[in-house]
Length: 283
Length: 283
Image (cartoon, rainbow over all chains, first blue to last red; front, side, top):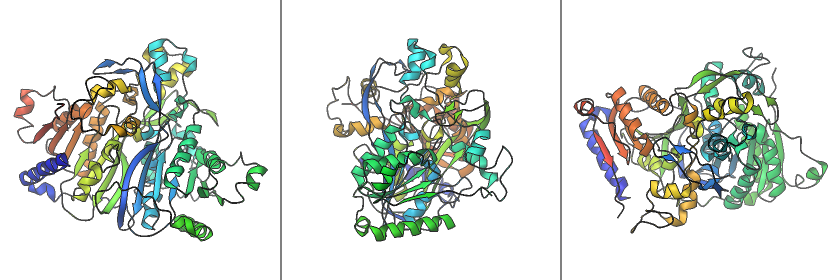
């Protein structure tokens, strides 16, 4: 706390030096209304310490010897509203995305993360294990570079080019042709494409299963919640329901994969867990 | 907006199904006091569209043909307080970190991001270009895997093992021996290590220079601000001052590199831009 106060003092000094600067405020207006938070912050779940024989080289201090790194962790950012008693939501993104996709729309409007908080719901937004702020395991790449391992053993780092994103995410049948009545604001597509990141969970043993395990750990920590999944994470949501039927209050799948659902799943656990699969039309 | 309302309706239904769930609230208490925001959201700056001949393969839909991807973009998350007229701050992390490091301390206390907002300052927290939610360019890795390029051309993906982090970030002289009077709460070191991610900006032509360019683009967008840098980004902060001396109200360097400062820098621009370099003692 003492260091905070020292920095604040410095900032006051700077304000005195440049009084005009204090009047310079950002003019962005993403939020749709007042947001008062009882709590906000971030943490990790599911991290495991593993020996890396190839942790790579700093460009400043040189190569690092083998040692333990943390892998499989999942970044969780949460907001708890000051008012309201809504059920908590966990928001899980899809392929090539991060939790950023729930924050602000590409054209600068409010995303679901803060909208649901403003309606009284605690909201937990995650980055898949191996993606975004959850990091990834650099070892399989560095092993080929620094240790001579077989290049064919490299993980693939998939990142959709615009042509593929165009039809995967259904802007239109073929780039750059849009669907009739497309609702996406195409003038903001550069901001959308900037959201996309490589699927680096391929560096982790188990790949996407780590995100399932991490979501289970999150529910074990925070208690019952509605889980919202998107696209690639649709099947992750199904696995989370199978593993924690008593902690998933409902599963909302936004254009998420359902192909692994079995009659046994429907008999149990989905006889108890409400499941909504939402699909948009393209015409 | 219609889809928001539909989802909120579904959530109300779920609450009715499980009324006890609504009483289940998270109990985390990271914030040090009330936080009321006039605005909050995220966006990207500095993204550029580049042809990738090796965008990798989806594990579901297979390999993607060559096409344009977005690289060099920088993720920016901002909070604007409802009260106060403090000067805006831009917070820039160091090596192996992301903007998460400014959100919550490893032992769950409030980080600088929300603390300064609660004191009336707009705060912009970034992930370096090539790191975290800013993504990276998968092409140099996929080119070796899928195209047979020379493995020696692979970028290094540096991620400090615990032994290296221990002395780099000055927990102590050698792992696991702490410095006398170490203030870091070692019981929370697992949460700290989970923050660390590979320095994947090595996949980008220009490496760290993209973060400098992105910070310049951010200041051009938001106007004058105090820029806070840490460790690796110390030298980035110096470059930002050189490029935009009229937009950096002050540079605060938290254990950041100063080795590139020249007498010419001191004569101009640092005759106008206050510069504080903060170092902790280790004994």
